[in-house]
Length: 77
Image (cartoon, rainbow, N blue to C red; front, side, top):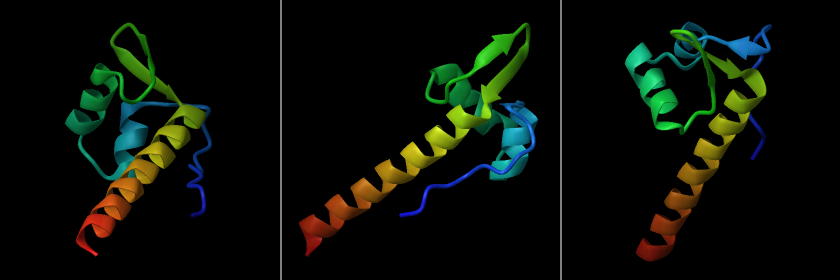
């Protein structure tokens, strides 16, 4: 499987950047940030995510999804 590359011109992404890229609400993104699932730093009230951390996170999520799908297929078939 080919690695997903986030082609955004910034090194540090805002919540809005991630929302737009993923087409999800701010609630979804901030939930991931607050839980620590998506690595980030907080400056005052603003979250920032390193583009490389975001890429790693997306690819990890994809690998986990694929592993679960494969496990289910093995159980069924």
